[in-house]
Length: 568
Image 1: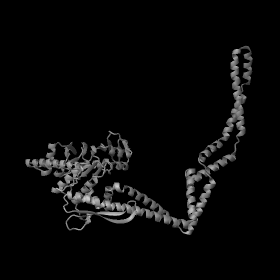
Image 2: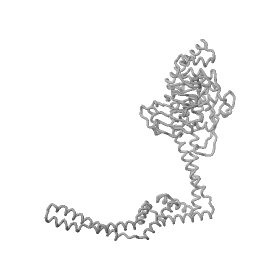
Image 3: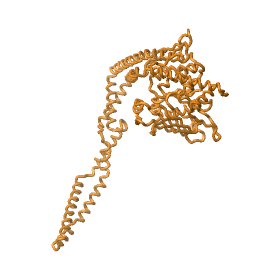
Image 4: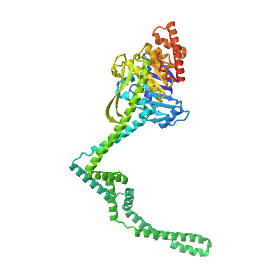
């Protein structure tokens, strides 16, 4: 779950720190206090695009930090499966520092890309923004919702469909490559033969360039080497040890202590003699061969030219050769190969269509269950006479299959089923999305759900229904919800008030967790607006008490194995 939110210098926020709890976390505040900035900060931390004015005026940068506490071994394993090093006790900390023109995101101190951040955040949190119900106006979103609902049942066939589509694309591309006329075919075949012959004749060996460079360096410096060897041999020959040995031999006749010195110099004279002999042999064996130098230089230039044309090394050149040999073979049997490529494209298309058909059948069967559950949830959200379904169509096969799908609905008795986007108002779309989220929440593993003003366009009894539905979801997920309706706020397990005040001549947004009595006061404000009378307070207390009873009933039903879908 999301345990902490820490924000510094973002929009109207100077510095805030919020500790969220399990169950339903409610955030309320007057219009203009910056309620949506709280959700916006979460979205910034999770990789949302940062506007130029997001940094608080006067600050050099902004900072957002989310602290998640995985509560089950399964959650930690999923995160480890994404490559995150996480012990059995440590929290997961996501942070983002936003500076003018750039930002830095980190997970547990390690810098990550925005795409990596979004990949990981999908396992942690689902944010339902103020305008997300507008996504129901997109048919593509309808199919995605269905696939999310059926992920365990269609994951394998979706993966197979993706593979079959890639195979089909490759086979089709190969078949479409057979579109040249006879003259083009002959020209390309001639070029292939030329390149193949050139590569074969060159016969570049692995590591040959390095060998040639060493040899060339040695040969090009051979004259200097020979001159140095000659001078060394002359110096050693001129300055031998013969005369000194004679003198020491004479001295040793009179003093035996000199004998070891004589022996040492005798050994040295022998070593010098051997060195001179080896130098002379080396000079005899080594000839300054200008032709060898030229041949080495010519071969080195050939190797480099071949690498420039066909590949960076001998292995790459061989791979190019194999490709050209295959292409030449194809060109020589062009008509037969074109026929085979066309047949393979047909077979690949057939395999793709079979996968698409299997995927479609599973989707259509699952759609009936999804629509039945969503319809039940919608009735629980005060759609009294709703019929909810899904119409399927077909498009050209793709990696996502060949299905098109659209939710259809009838909201009044006797009305025909029409696409959802044609008949639902903003408030109805909002409740429909909540019904869908409720159904998906039963099966998904995302621990935290955030709703930003899910109550748009609703009031009265419908608001009560929405509050009960949020209570149900919070039984299995942590829910964080911004609302302006007292019916929803009354259901809070943790209630936070967002306020705007003036500090040092500037507006500042703050957020505080409310006690039970403070929550009643906030409910009273939501109920009456300006004047807070004792009757308003009494109404707020009663609403809070009723919400508590509803929550206990729901928890009791969940504990008894019921689905919680009751009509009040």
